[in-house]
Length: 153
Length: 83
Image (tube, rainbow over all chains, first blue to last red; front, side, top):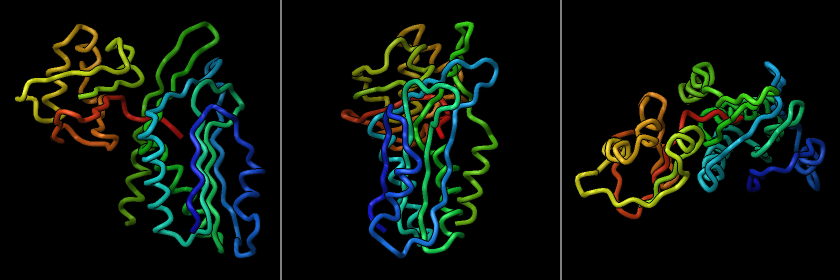
């Protein structure tokens, strides 16, 4: 597999362009699975602010991507994670997994987003229309999903 | 030793980064937490709920027993919430 594409930054992402890049110039890609995480407007949310740990973030995502590439026969992987201010309706994270066959692509995509939720140093702060704010709390359900992948080996 | 704080730990500690010189008896992450917590009321507030504090040494997640040494980069933060 070519090196995964990993980007962390404030710029919005283009799902179509990122998807096209995974099959450009090659004819062995049978399918590309995608996950796009969006910002919801729960409870009058005005914006999310994402903070991360520069340096460690990229290392952690590269480690997760290498793990996925070792488990499934992939032809390509893309992870784009935004930081900074994100408004409701905007994309937060994009995961793409390409393979010759759908099962590897779909499973690798699910694995990647489950691990991004628990294994990469990002933190979300919610800011509300009234001016209030709060840090998003980690969910045990997310931890449990990530642990399931460990159990599957 | 460089110490970094993220999210609400940064807000409570009142800084995102500081250089510290803990005494030699501070040998692991847990010991460093106890020593840092005594630096100011803000630090004490940051570390008040140990169950909500995670750590990384040299950019790798680790537990309280992980050793720390001069020159290390040690980060403290709440459980991660990306994705």
